[in-house]
Image (tube, rainbow, N blue to C red; front, side):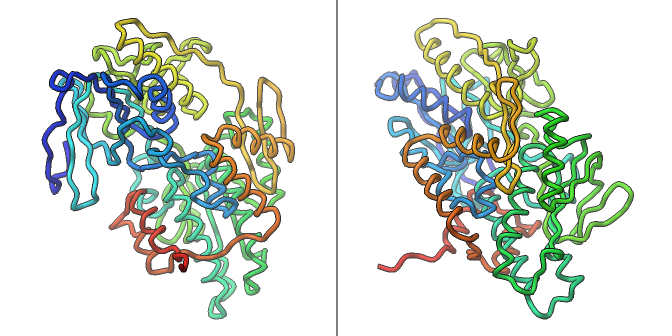
Length: 470
């Protein structure tokens, strides 16, 4: 089911023709990468098995730190690592999964952009870790007039948008009312992504104002809109209330119990018809399973593939599903679906990899069992909130805890060193306000009629960065 304008290459030879078992891991997020890491350790040097990872990007992105890229606390390259470097003994295919046939055991992968082509990859065993997509709830307004925060391209694009707004608002031709419109930023969604993004935007914009003398702090308006009773509902009402209080103290306008009616080119429309004029809206109101799953002949639960406790897809031997795209029963919580968190995804990846190895030996796999240790969030101004092993933390200590734990979770020593150096520079120096792309290129990247994929955005942004002189 590839794109009509793409040529189709011949199917990769099946295992019966090569004598090798083929294991296909579809997805380069936490679930897919950690499954691939374990499979490489167990199978990477074997001649009778070939493991292939398929991902739309050729890097692994540490998504919990995305908001720090948007806030210029970290360089974009600090939280990514090459999949080819991370998995040197596995095969890798960069591309978009456009088709999956569980009956014929083939997957269609397209790459090369609009003028590209597609491959059909055969497999004996498949690990489905396709992640999730931003949920716009079927509304064209949010889809066409907002930024998202799921990919590296999203974070880089948001950072450049923030700087572009500051440059525009600092111009002498702007009236006070015009400045207020340009430097009004709205984040929709009060979960982890929304709260951390709102805090990051607030920190970055106010931290950059010393370079923009014509913009007053009073002109800047950062608003967080959340449909629930309290922000960060995953951490409980008490920590949610604390987070809301701290955000308000930091200058963020928090509105709870409000579901955005629409987003237009001129601003955000609230349920009572009020228009919040703004040129910058970040949509972080939730995620939804990939649309590709709809075509699969599998049982689903709220759009996610329903699997058993071993993460096997019923009716299709040799196929496992995990991470955000799967409804995995939580045996430590009465069989309810596991929450779509990174800590669950990476541990599911390890268990699935072990079950693949067991299947290759003709043995049954093991059930996934994991009890959540806790959750943390950074909320700006070197403050955070956390609930770990039932204990609650807040303030600067929680922020230090957030950085310490996530630094330890980063793969490879070089990634840890890069992040630590970036954090040190952020403490010593003011925010970097270098705009890597100008207004015209920025308009092209955000134009609804011609949206660019995450990979295209990143490549475009990287191409525009100044090159070192030799």
